[in-house]
Image (cartoon, rainbow, N blue to C red):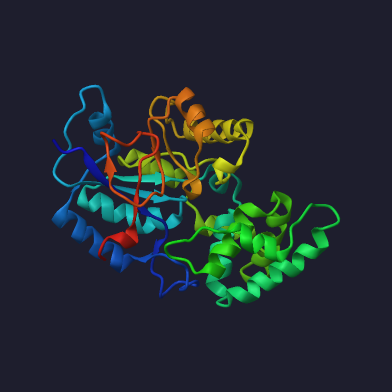
Length: 312
């Protein structure tokens, strides 16, 4: 009985060489096409509905080598580059747009950091700039020393250097929220653009584009409201994030009995899972890099492999 499914995670899919930001970490459209060829030759693409059937009371079997394709962050790349290719091949994609980026035309800090890194190759210079900036915030915020912050980031990232990982974690999580938000704002304005609203409209899908995906059979799920690192929030704030994200899904006529969750940064904890279960979340997707086993894995903590784990 086949109960294992490969769930693949994608982010940027674009013509990297011809773009304004060729150094952004993403998958070129040519490589994506080759990967789709590889997938169709060796796997059976399935839909969210098929996955839910397999998880249902009947515990149905999955087809041979099932694979589910997921796309995080709601980039316009997904509408212009990914959607036509999937539709032509009869493959369902699962798209997870963060609500704030779409509704408020703000560039998420996670993406600001991506583009800052794409235009400033010397990460050491950015780290020095960050620590110099911290000094002006010490009178209003309790801040650690440079050495303490460096020691606080102990994790390793599969595709980032140590310096990049430290910079990302400081600006995503370790610094007090007002401090990191202001530093990211300044760095983005200095190195990328000061016109955040225009950049957001270029970067993310619109509501009409997301609705079009859904109309054509693609799955639309939640990626939170602000793309926050949810396991670092209080349970009260987690609930607010989820409820605001659900309001966004309702604007797309996605009912509370059919919604799914993709955790920003892969971050979740017990209190978040409790909130999701209370709100009838059907599936939850993490960033743990392995093949999912439906007989072992909780439906709210399904692992996903990265696009780089497949040949392209």
